[in-house]
Length: 543
Image (cartoon, rainbow, N blue to C red; front, side, top):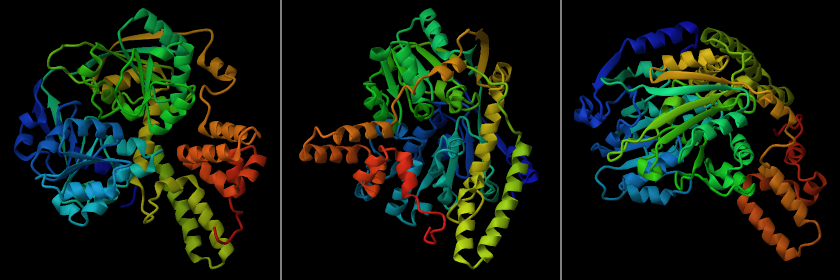
């Protein structure tokens, strides 16, 4: 199906003409209302939950059928596995034997929760009957589109999704996909409509110095605990250091970020939710799906979202999806009626360029025409040199991101990702744009907008920053190797330390091992210089 403006518009119209509204009352869950209490989650459905915590995943886990539930991140799977003992969580170190043992067990209905990257292991263990014997649920389905730009493997399950006899997309905040397979398989949209006031009050603070603004806010709003959602470990480290709150702070992030932070002497760093302290910093790994139960923090929830366009543009939070998901992490308690306060601290950039949907689609169309011309030449040339140069062009041009490598087809999720990212840029061109986006989300009431301007701004801080607040892993490895070969260690000690470095930093040491310790030393253990030297010349016909 050709991608053009008309197709996108026709597609959206077709889907939105088939919306089925389902009403839900306060304190009800999906299992309490029709059609879910009769059929479970219907197949070939995009379920727009509207509300977080309404029990969609729990319903699927409890429903009498075999299920595979794909969750975007490991912490979600860890949390669900703890709550539901008959569930198998598949991620990272879970072996093929463990998966096979679970599948062959006497548990009547198999419930497997898996990351997108580990889905293939479940598929290999079950075989072809996976498509007929299992219901496939893509939970927090918007992440497929939101994350594909930096996490390309998140869409791998989509190459199998439409082969399943029974399947569904589910989220409180779905982003409508443009993959034409949803039309071909006649997917319908079901949307929950709350019959109660569900909007959350939020305050926006428009600032130009994140450190001073956070410091002032904390001083003026003393609380037992703060939950600060900030998608940048570099900036989190700087905030903690400059506010002098390291002993009282915990950071929740990915495994790689945890390793980096621990090596930079940040002690309370975790890859799953536990051991909450006064200041709790959470990266995007914890923005959706995970449950933060009252019993784990026992305090009123002070939720602070932070976006810093000066230091890290990727910290922009989408009011229509991520903000809703973040606030929804805090689960209601059956015994305590705790309060939830929500603040979004952000700067803006009026010079941030943002393309509209039509402009993006025209851009993609032009890129595709050029790509096809180069590909036609690649297929027609016969000399090794010409074929090699054209192959490199096809692989290295930016547009190659929009092509599925396995079959050369259009990657619709990358197109959707670009449209989504450009839309968010538009929100952060001004605080009024951001306020309008929050209003349009139908999930928030912006009750106050404050502006804080300081003479010493984030831009000044960026210009005066002597070095990054965290040493990179490559710098840590380089310093360790230089010290190791300084002449003060025995051969036995060197071998032991090298073995430790191999274990802790396999992705870095593989390049050093290829080039050799002596040559790496001459290059100052500079990973970029090592990679450049290892890279074969462009005229090498074996490339």
